[in-house]
Image (cartoon, rainbow, N blue to C red; front, top):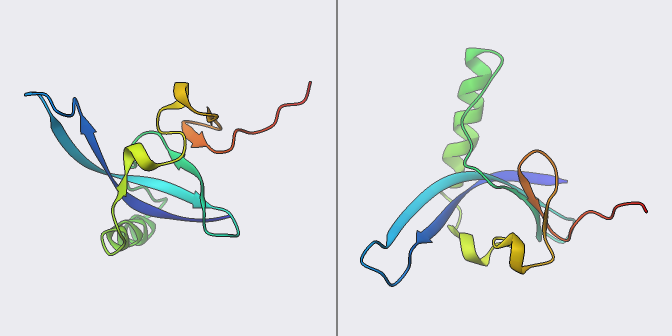
Length: 102
């Protein structure tokens, strides 16, 4: 499954005097057709086991700025309670939801 970091734009309280815009970095995963299937609910921090690994992660994050900004409310499952989306694993939105065995 391919993935990358992407900048995501969100609008809080749209159309009100308290409207607020934020841009944050998220992990996004894609299927073989390039469609988003999984993305992190929370923004991502750089991490590495060594200083060089941290720098490599920061470099991948900087690449996100070169790609189109994703809109939070257009991502699959952004409003989990109104869509067939579920939290997949460890704070990721998953679309379509993972099938569970009965």
